[in-house]
Image 1 (cartoon, rainbow, N blue to C red):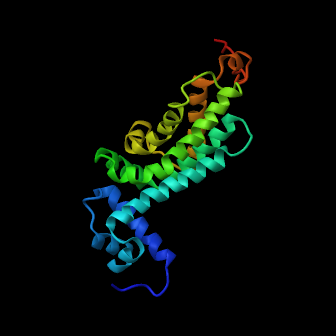
Image 2 (cartoon, rainbow, N blue to C red):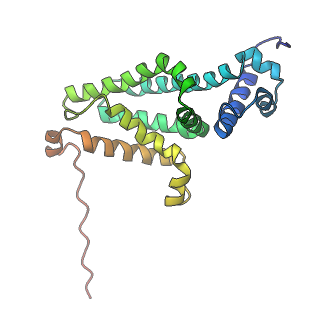
Image 3 (cartoon, rainbow, N blue to C red):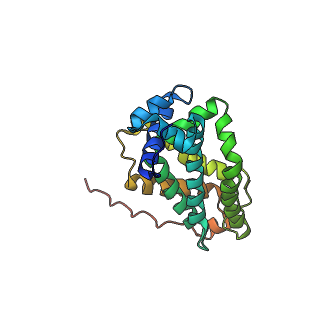
Length: 226
């Protein structure tokens, strides 16, 4: 097997990007190494050199995503600011990552429908930690009185689902709402909407009554004289 004289990060990145696209379109079983190599513009031996085989390449895509999400969560919630600010930062970062890698949601969806065999090889390494950071942030919110007593085991899953659905149902959403650019402006809108909706269902009623999240009243409209 021909081996590159030196590691080529650009070639490796091209392989991952091409494989991500093809796996999203055809699923794991529907893609061959030669097809990936052709799409990446590299020799098939390069895939074997960097990843060993197609399955390891597929696992690398899933692991890269899980590792990236771990970093996003850690950075977003790793400060002493309010829970609302931390969740807002997380939603922005996570949504930006998903929208910037539109094929990942399709890969994970296909993987789950196929039984999740490959996903479960990666999940034990990253899943509990990723989930645990969000859970602890919400549990801390309950202890600090920012949230009411809620099911902190399920709350992180619900929050993530509120974000992922916009990528999974993107074609349907654009049919219902018209053409949408999933850009920075939309991410800001999505973050504000998601966190507000999430917290309005979980915020401590005493804080709500005290006006913590109260918004200024809308100006009264003048009556138009006939």
